[in-house]
Structure formats: structure tokens, C-alpha cells
Length: 481
Image (cartoon, rainbow, N blue to C red):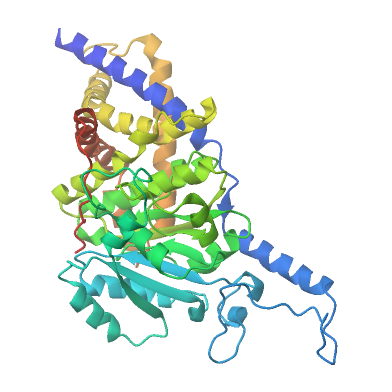
């Protein structure tokens, strides 16, 4: 009797895997053309060179009609008088250099974490004179004084300003009904902080806005690649991984899991409907004005902004670079963070006006991946049990012949995804040595990754319960150690 139950559960879970893998296969096998990489930069450089060859030479007397163009709107000339794009380590032509405004919302952050992020921004292969960082904080944050002192003590040419959120002023900016509020006043969310800073600071339409968390690190050519990508796309987004792989098994597994998801599934969803990943997305201020900024009461403001941008026809380019942040090493903090994240797609699942293809692509990249994690709760142990019985031959032919094609298909997809996960992680995570890379690869093996995927069933189920009960999601700050 027990054997029959095991086989029945195995057959059911394999069927669910088959449906989910069929949907995922449409994303895995069709690589998106919306890739921003070194070839994008080469095209921008070549087009600028071609434009320079075609324009008339400057007249010796310096009169009008010389063909000399002024710098782009919002671009300031460095103090030494050099051209914005003339930095020896910046490959962009001067015409493609734009002012980049980095918004960094903080709350109860450690100064050292923010300092690392500012150092990373200052080290970018991009003219520092064209970068401004706005650190946005809540007036009741007890850690702001220490953060401001630490930033003031830094020796850097990077312009950093602090912006205190005035929620009363933000509420007055919106008439009733413009946003959905729960309770009274403006919710204390990341979206509210970003909206306030964007509303009160001076942004030219050509300025490029990007959002960083206090722990965000990006490759040193990210800013110049983003500027090059914005020549072709309305929004540019980096992929994602975790960088604190030495803090425990959970961050290590997440570094591969998130890298694989963003490379194999997210990057192939750029045709939309797409979401943004909360950090290291680059968008011109003019586009944000058209989208009417962020949705104040959205706990997953990146999801809401991405869906709104897709509905307005904004194109998304995905950079072949990985933003690195800190993954919670504590299980409770990890579950709380993911519980908030996985609820993001729920309010958009039945968005009107999408085609069947668009809705299917959105569901495949969100709900079905969650379903596969929940299925693992039964599918993984039952699958291992059936494998053991089959290898030992203690019960004869355990798997029905009719089920073998499904099992084979699921196995092929799992192996392919596992190999591509290694490829993405090796590219995303920096290794100090070959031994470190080997140790990482052994620890983050396919079985460990399957267990990590199964762990997602906890925040997924909690989020589903919250949604069914109508519990409003709350914005909780994830500890950064």
C-alpha cells in the first residue's frame, strides 16, 4: 500500500514539474536580444566616430556652423576643464556621457556598509563629476548621525547629499485617489522615500536615475554600460547575485540561485511584461516623469514600476553584469525578506489588456517558479525514494512505463538548468582562487540547489496565506551585517 501511495505522489509531482518545465522551457531556449554588453558599447563608440567623420570640420575663425556641439543637457564640465567623456578609463564618447543620479534609501544602516557602496560608486569607470549620490533617510532613523559623520570623513570627489523625507509634504503632493493608501498618511516604504527625493530634487529630463541599496556593489564598468544601453533602450537593468558567500550556506546557495534565475528566466522576460529588480536599474528622469514616479504604497515598488513601464511601451535592456548585495544569513530574516518579495506579482496576475503570450510569460517567470518550489516539498523526497527503489531493484519496475517520457523530460530540463546555474554563478561571483571556486561548486551542488529551491516554499506559502486573508504587506528593513 505504501509503495502505491509513493508512486501515485511521484506521478502527480512529475506531472506538475512537466507543466512548469514546459513553461520555463519557453524562456530557457529563447535567449532575449535585449542584451547590453561590451558589443553595445562598441556600437555606441562606432556610431559616435561615424558621426564625427560626417560632420563638417570646425572653421578656423571659430564662427557658427563649426559643427561643435554643446554637452548634453544636465552634464557639467569637470573643474579641470576636460570633457566629460575624456577620462582615460571611460570608453564612452563625450556625447553619450549623461549625469547619473544615484538614489540610496537607508534606514538603520551601519556606516561601514554604506561607505563600501559609496567607494564602489566612486571607483566606477565613469566621470565622477557626472555622478551625484542622494542618500534618503527617515527623520526618526537613530543611525543617521553616525552615517553622516562617516560619509563626511571620506576623502572622495564623489558628490553625496542627504535628503530627509518629509511625509507630510509628500502627502500634500497627491490628491486623494491618486494613490491607494492604507490607514492615514504616507506609508513608510522605499517607494515613498524614492518619490519624495525625486519630487523635491532638481532632475533634468536627460538625467539618468538609478536606485541602490546601502549594500549594493556593481562591476566597475556598470555605469558606462548603462549609459551606452540607454542609447538603445528606455530602461536598463543589471542582473543580480549575493556577494557574502562566506557568511554561511544560505547566502552561498542564494548567490547561485538568484544569478541563475536572473540570467535564465529574468533576462529572457525582457520583452515583457517585466519587473525591475529593486536596485541597479537605470532610467532617464523623463521616463520616470511619464510614469508618474513610484507607487507610494507598493512594498515591491520595483515590480509595480516595471509593469507600469511595460504598459507604457518602455523597452528594457538587461546588462550582462551582476549587481551584488548582502543576503541575510539568518533564516528568519531571509524568510521575512522573501515573503515580501514573492507577493509582488500577485496584484498584477490579472492585469487587463495583456495578450495571452504576455500573460503566459509573466506567469511562467513568477507563479510557476513559486509552484515548482512548493512541489519540491513532496517531489524531492518522493523522487529520491523512487530513485533508490529503482537503483536497488527491491520492488521491481517502480516507475510506470507511461510516465518515463515525463520523467526524462523533467530530468533533461533539471540538468540543463543546473549546468546553466553553474555558468551564471561562475560569472557573477568573484573567486579569490581556483580552490575557492571548487569549494563553492561542491557546496552549491544540484542537490543543495534543489533544497534551496524547496526552502522558498516557506515564504511562498506564508505570502499566499497573507494574500488569501487580505493581510496588507508591511515593509521591513532587512538587517545587513
